[in-house]
Length: 260
Ligand code: COA
View 1 (cartoon, rainbow, N blue to C red):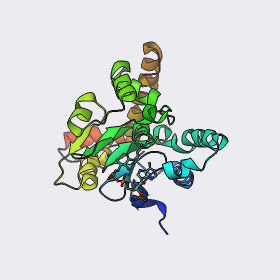
View 2 (cartoon, rainbow, N blue to C red; view 1 turned 120 degrees about the horizontal axis):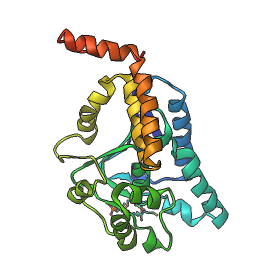
View 3 (cartoon, rainbow, N blue to C red; view 1 turned 30 degrees about the horizontal axis):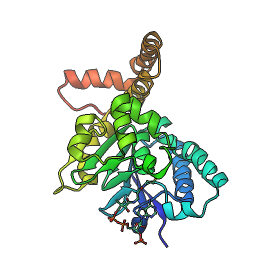
């Protein structure tokens, strides 16, 4: 039996793989629960610096809600599922580590919403992204309307939500929907990990402070945001890694960060 979701650790990197390729890695109830369990495990582990979320196979990152399972669900169960999307998946945007969706194939509906919950996104050149929900008589229910509008703006978000059209990699990049497109000839996972190397090599306190500061920017009035930036800068100023970085610069060598 498939494990539903696999977790692999490579030192400070965690790789979480949706593993139901026969169902296009769709989000069943059990898959969402397993993602929540993994989230709790990773969030409690202070050594995790980057968490990559990807899908098994080459066709799909995630085709959204498991529509076969959904057919047998009552309205009450669907409501519970919507609550579970929020309680079990929001660690991706709230943990102290950077979360990155590595989109290896189509990301549709809840699949795109899952990617939008992450801090960063890369996609393979041939993949497409879309929110087909309004064509199914519903709306995106895993944070998609809110996160998409914040990320790319109201009019662009409405275009995608109302027309249900699928966006290719070139458009996704120009919309700011993804940070990077990986050429089809390259492994989307390995090339994305190369892109993320500087994050893993950076000073942990500074990386965490930067993540928290930027995540809060859109939701705070500017003066409060500037206060938060100042507060987070203080944490860096007091760190041994900041002193080490200045020493390394003077000695023309790479800094050896310790996370202190
Ligand atoms: N839930 C459950 N099973 C799904 C699924 C989903 N969201 N999406 C695809 N599958 C299953 C198909 O039923 C099929 O299984 P089967 O062979 O047992 O019938 C298998 O995955 C392959 O799908 P198929 O449609 O044959 O592959 P494709 O390459 O032609 O198309 C998709 C792939 C993802 C584009 C297409 O399946 C699709 O549009 N899926 C629905 C996506 C969607 O609307 N999601 C939003 C939900 S709100």
